[in-house]
Length: 525
Image (cartoon, rainbow, N blue to C red; front, side, top):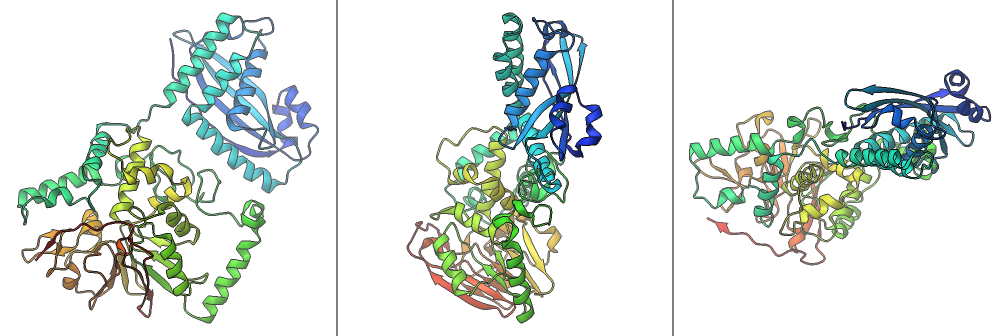
């Protein structure tokens, strides 16, 4: 007779006076002391215990006093209501017994602020509480909190109390099941273990003699379509693009603010919410004034930067040498992470500077590992730096990583930004993402490969008209062609970190402080 519980949360900020008629006496009594606002929400779930058992006890009865205490404590503890300055009051509770000895709950409750709050503060608190409730339901924390509250309830008979605790714990255990977990993720995990020490996905294919046969090419394309497309296309309902991840609750697309429901990237500097932004909202207007003044003085610059690979000191030195100022736009050409000393700091800095970027092969591996972790995949048997990075990046930084596209096109600059390259003669929308992250050479027979063939760089064949800025190819170092500029100058291998400032196409670089990673690459003629 056990049934998995489910929950839904719907929060709205309402003026207390209009709510008081719908609240129970305890809620009205608490609310009469306040002149501000009350938050109202609801919770729906089922429990494998009969209604008669739930209403037993020396003060249970038809009013359900025991249940109200348990639910109120459970909700408050699950979302840490006290730390947010709210108390939880159960306003309405409907119990419906269903076949199999289970009971369905429909609970309406109120969140009452302990102190007077402005509407903007209540609105912000509603977003935080809504996010906390959704997370608690998804992670099973709500069921755990309910179980803990039930365990301390002495008014129930011991047999009923133990049964209720057991059912809540069963629910919490069930909440850990991830609907995204499947065999494909395990296969991806084993693939990662096999090629983790290689520089890109083509490593397994490159052990074969070139060129590939038509059947091999077709097989690779089918494998890419089945396994390597972003999970967004495979799980459309669960994945919401840059501001969502597989398994996340979906929120409004304009809800991108930090802590605003989906843990977005940007602070909210609006009049009602600026008190929650850094420096109580005073810093944002100052930065905006600086950006506006710089735009008035000169055309905003774009700073394209080659593969950083976690070299945070060199990145900071490069930006100083570029005379970076607020208003300049930074575009990273992929592979911000892996091999270097501090990948986490590089991603955090990129996000906080409002930088853009394209997805490199190492960035993609971090995202794939994060998806595998969310799906319950086991850690790799052999240590994987990509797994480690995916496990330790902050939520905001992961969302920034997920937002990286395959390429960026700028009509104003007449430029394209990509990690590895493009194949001439194929329109941008038909380019293969795997190749855009991995290619280095195009052989005379048309074979595209990620191997370094000294005489056959892909960029030499690119005929424009847009200029491509790319990275990935540390073997060739700085590359300058009529319509292509390669900026991977091997910083993590002890070389240099290079930027190209647009629109003037001025090159700037700094030396690496040391060799962080030993370079291993076979050269081909």
